[in-house]
Image 1 (tube, rainbow, N blue to C red):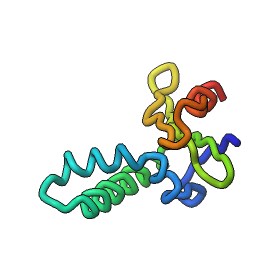
Image 2 (tube, one colour; image 1 turned 45 degrees about the horizontal axis):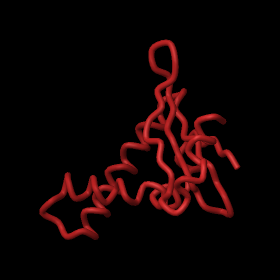
Image 3 (cartoon, rainbow, N blue to C red; image 1 turned 180 degrees about the vertical axis):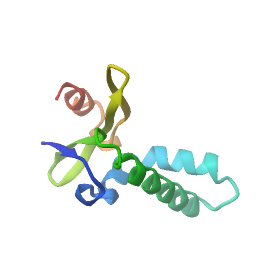
Length: 108
């Protein structure tokens, strides 16, 4: 089921982090190399949360999320850009990959 999320209060941040878990771990390792892995992830999640607070202040910015059985399975960010839309951060949770969820999200 497609969900359009336009503010932080409607976003389940923990479920979103499950979709982005691999990226968060990789970014944490890159940006916080001196910390142990669990703290790298925590710092990266905190940084991403702070980014989203700013992102949702833009009146035309939103998240599109595919949800199945109460889980976020794929997600992407959209916002106006020049004369169109900027699509960012399209990702599908590992256990749902190769099942068409990302393509379906873009299509919707």
